[in-house]
Length: 490
Ligand SMILES: Cc1cc2nc3c(=O)[nH]c(=O)nc-3n(C[C@H](O)[C@H](O)[C@H](O)COP(=O)(O)OP(=O)(O)OC[C@H]3O[C@@H](n4cnc5c(N)ncnc54)[C@H](O)[C@@H]3O)c2cc1C
Image (tube, rainbow, N blue to C red; front, side):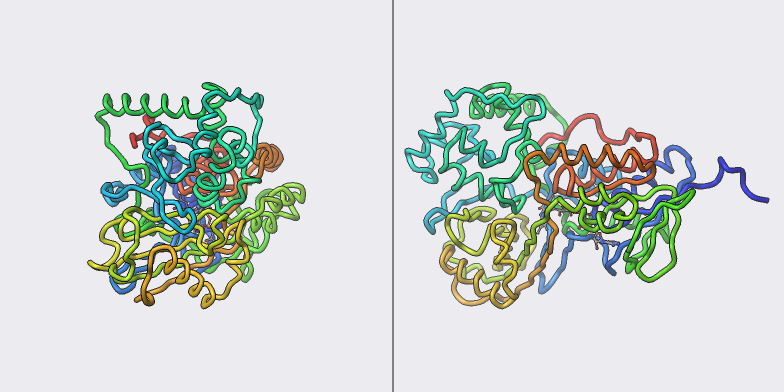
C-alpha cells in the first residue's frame, strides 16, 4: 500500500561540496532533527575530494593551507556552526605575541600602525608617529576630521577607491587600502563595492561624518563592552589545530551515511512536471523537491540556463578572479630580515609579483618543525591576472626574487606547494547588492530552487555558512533558532 501523500519524505539535492554545500546539507539535517520533518538530502560533488577551496595538507611536519587559513569571528555564523557540531575545542587563535602586519613601501617593511583598521586609524598617536605614511599623506588623511559627509541615500554604494580617495586621499588608497582590502578580495578597488564588503565605513560617515572620529568612538565603546563582558574571548581570526579541513571533515561526518556522493558532476538542472530534475554528467537523472546550487555562480548559471536564462545571465555576470597560494618552507636563518609579525602586504604600486605573504608558522605556532619558517605567498587576483598565468616554475622564480629583495632570503626552499584557484574569487562591483536582490526576486518565481555561496553576500567562510543556512531555511520554509543571540567578543 502506498504512503499517504503528506507522509512522503521530501528530497533536497545540494550541488557542490565546498563549505557552502556541506553547511547547507548539514542545515537540512538539523531542520529534520529539530522539526521531525521527513527530508532526505543528497550532496553531489564533482571532485573526488570535499572542501572546494578549503584544503589542508601535511608534508615534512608542515601544515599547509592551500586556500583559507582562518576565518573572522566578528561574523558569527562559522563560529556558531563550530559550536553546534562540537569542534569548538579544536579552534586556535592567531599567535597573540606578534599580531602585526607589515606593508611594503619602497622595498622596505613598515608595520601597520596599532589601531589602524583596514581603512582608517582608531588610535591617533600610533598613526601620527607611523613611518608608513608621508607627512603630506597623514595631513590629507586627517582632513577626514573636517570634511563634510556625502549623502548616499539608503541604498547608495560607492567603490572602495572613490571612498578612500574622497575621505583620506590618494596615498592612503595606494599604500594601505588597496593592499589590505584589495588583497582580501583579490579585487581592483576602483570597482569593489564598499556597501557589499565593508558597509560599516559608509555607515560611520553617515552617522559621525568623520570616519576617524567614528573609529575612535567605536574602539572606546568596544573596550568598555569588553570590560563588562565575562563571556568567551576569541581572537579576531581563528583556525583549527589541524587546519581548516577540520570544519569540512566535521560537517561531512555529521551527515548520515550515503548523503555525500563525490565524483558526481552535475551537468544540468531542469524543472519536471512535479519535481526538479538534476542530471549528472555520467549517471541517471535524480529527482528532488528542492535544489540548492552551492557551486560557483558561473557554474550555477550554466546548470540552470534552460530553466531561466535571465537568472543564468545574472549569475554569469558575477565575475571571478583567479588566484594562487604558494607555500614555501625555509630554515629561519635563511630569512634574516623577516619582519616580526604575521606577514606583509604588497601594494600594486610596488610592482612586485606577490600580493601578500603570511608567515604561517608564526601566525599559528606549531605549523612547522622548530627552526623552520613557513611562508605562504598570495598571488594573482583581479589586479595581476598575468601573474596567475605564469607556469609553476616562473611563479616560483618570481616569488623567490620577491623574497630575496624584501626579506633578504638566502638559498632555496626545503619544501614548496602551490594551489591554484581558477575563477574562485567573486568580484563585487558597485551595486552588487542590488544585483543580488534582483537574482533573489527572480528566484522567487521558482519555488524549490536556491543559490548559495561566496558570490552573494560575502566571500569569507562565515558568509558562506550564513548564505547556505539561510538558503535552506528559506527553501524549507522554517527558521531554526540555533544561532546564539549574543555575538562572541573578539
Ligand atoms: C586562496 C584563497 C584564500 C582564501 N582565504 C580565506 C580566508 O583566509 N578566510 C576566509 O574566510 N575565506 C577565505 N577565502 C574565501 C573562501 O575560502 C571561499 O569563499 C569559500 O571557501 C567558498 O566556498 P564554497 O563552498 O562557496 O565554494 P567552493 O569552495 O568553490 O566549492 C564549490 C564546490 O562545488 C563543486 N562543483 C563545481 N561544479 C560542480 C558541478 N557541476 N557539480 C557538482 N559539484 C560542482 C566544486 O568542485 C567545489 O567543491 C579564500 C579563498 C581563496 C581562493
